[in-house]
Image (tube, rainbow, N blue to C red; front, side):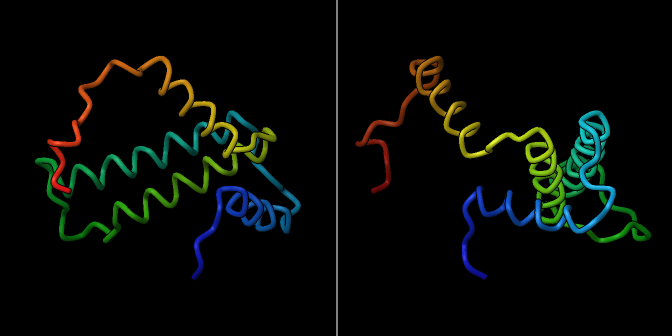
Length: 114
């Protein structure tokens, strides 16, 4: 499978959703879905990296799968609100580059294992 741009991901999700009469959930329902999916991701992270091992009876899921579910709902929300996620990403990266320019300790070229 070839790599896709964020725009292509948004188009793919839109094409999928538009085949159903129900269409996108309303924003409040999508926030509830985001919360649900984030909880499922947190549960998997806790199973892999935390102190709570998975029960033998629990369904096998992966962090990758849960991140994919979360991404799908984020794309649904963006699409339903007509938000271009590439633009949103660019805006947040600009914010981090300016607001947080001196917040963290930068790695010097000499410190890198290059």
